[in-house]
Image (cartoon, rainbow over all chains, first blue to last red; front, side):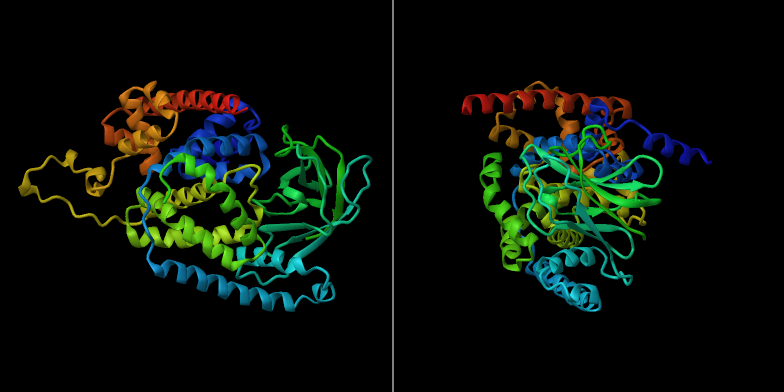
Length: 242
Length: 212
């Protein structure tokens, strides 16, 4: 293994749940002094490490208000036109893609699914492979307080994005979060991120789904598992193959 | 107009609602969100990347991303302006990385002027009429209870943080700009942030305590 790969490996094995380390890295990330490979690595670790996410959010709340002192600069009208054009263009690509998916055509009750798929395909406008749909059935875990209707997850054809949506609203205590996990046949579950209200768009970094055949949702403290491993009951689960 | 961190919090409620609407595909709400926030985000981007055309390209990318990610915005975790500003800053910082991998086209000062090449650094090249990073930091500090926190920093510490945060300079660039060893600058920034953190967190706790 070349030396740089070895050090990258060592860095990714560091214990990011250590609060002081997470805090120091997040401070550098938010200040902007964390650069290059270190910055990209930090971003790729965010979805799975709640300690890093919390520290980053806290540093952002501390430092971003400093920008309130900046004198606003009005963008030229052209910028909004370009944004608007891009959203229009993507919308039509999306509409075509969804029409080809007969699976969805029958499910007219899923009006909101179009919006979900929109987000997936906006993220991947050139994706040609259809998304993989995973139905996560409620496990009925005792006293979980969540509804019996499943959560539907859609993994983009290129495997980079997952969108989850509950079929019925999920009632959850304010101090709890739902966290989504990829569960491999062997080894520890890997966190894919928290799902506010049971829904969310998740960027799938690297090979996070490699070897996984099940998606599971657990109830965790607000913001996600503090340890990086599931701590609460599994309330939804579904099998899939990519 | 957004001129103080007080507005920051006060405007959050409206912006949260607009983001939530945008998250379910409401283009009109998204347009309003753009109207209310784009001049702030462009100012943020321009501090880091001074090229106006590039800054507007970055702004375009930022809002396309915001539209895409609006449904994942969680008002319980983050203030909308903080979220939006973070996205804009990250994009701007990433644009510097790309810029560095491209050949630089900057005219060298003619030798006949006899200027010390050391003085003709990046900062001078981009300097303009707008307030410097230190002015901004003190202005932001005035608007907050931050002033006391800032006083705990040495002038060098203050400048190092201002250059890194507002101008998006790396440690190495701050070191060049301040003509100090890299290690010194790194420890200034690190200690400044640690001081600001404990001071700001104490101030927030104080505000909460007095508000209850």
